[in-house]
Image 1 (cartoon, rainbow, N blue to C red):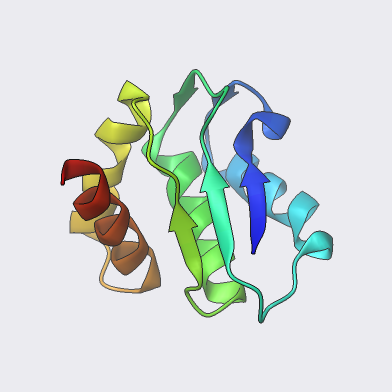
Image 2 (cartoon, helix red, strand yellow; image 1 turned 180 degrees about the horizontal axis):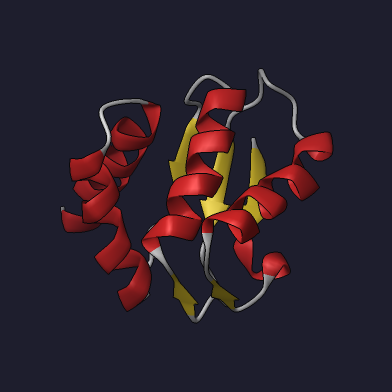
Length: 104
């Protein structure tokens, strides 16, 4: 399993173009068959648009084999339900799985 530490893209993650840029930067290091885990440690804030773009690209790239590490980051916890409700695809499944784990 690959672990993607989002802090390497900055501590404040905003905008769709920046989310796409982050995915494009990490893609050469990914294997489409290997599950990945997203680590929010060290990130101060993330917007729903950044997270949506990054997760959309990532889950489409590897067929939804993405997990999100539990976090207490308020901006992440605010963005995740928005994505879970707005999407009906791998992103929604990934986010809902993470929310279920974090709320149990």
